[in-house]
Length: 291
Image 1: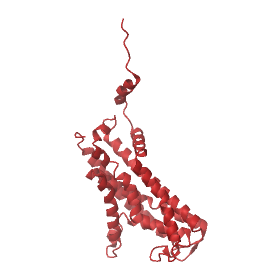
Image 2: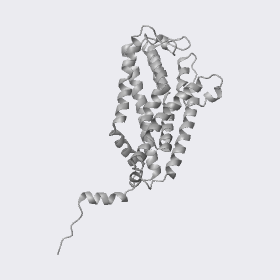
Image 3: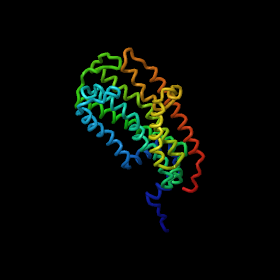
Image 4: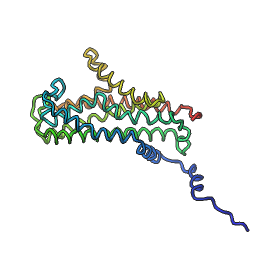
């Protein structure tokens, strides 16, 4: 009798793959592994880690402090003031750019390389792929903000010092309290940062172009900053995604007020919800037969 040979192990694994329907966790791990192999993510994290150091050194070495900016008057002599100065600058276009580099490309790259059909035939659904990519982009945004905050605060305190901070109401804030408030100020930038991440996602899905997905959120953010500077349209200003970046100001006053923090959370949530809803609807209806 002729023995029937079983197929090689590799072939058995390939044949058995379609029978296992991957869940959201498996799709998320796949997206994370894919992001870890791409240089742009590591480049963004490296920039968030190292860029604040020369910025702090340059500002600290200036003979004239930037008095026309918030906390600029004390930035050359106080580490907490310098960290807040960098935060105010970063929220104008740096954070939208750093997060959009991944979020604006994470969907458009599938169109660019024609890999949608391959991705969606990996025993998973469009919904799982969509939320896996969204969670990966949002998780990366949280990581970038955390690295930037830690690098800025630590370098500012080590290079400039940790003297008591003068608040926006003229009150003296002790060093320990100032550290908590500065950290909370950076944390308050998370909701609008995630809002810009979701905005980059919908632009990435809509235009199918990584360049648009990365650049458009930055341009829109700068336009919002300019529009928000016009005093005659206060009603519109409150609904702009850039306005929540300023909500930390109330933490540095006496008495403190947290109303802008709550409003910023709501505004960021609305922007995120609308952006993700639109992106999900486009992905659900997308024709992938061509690749």
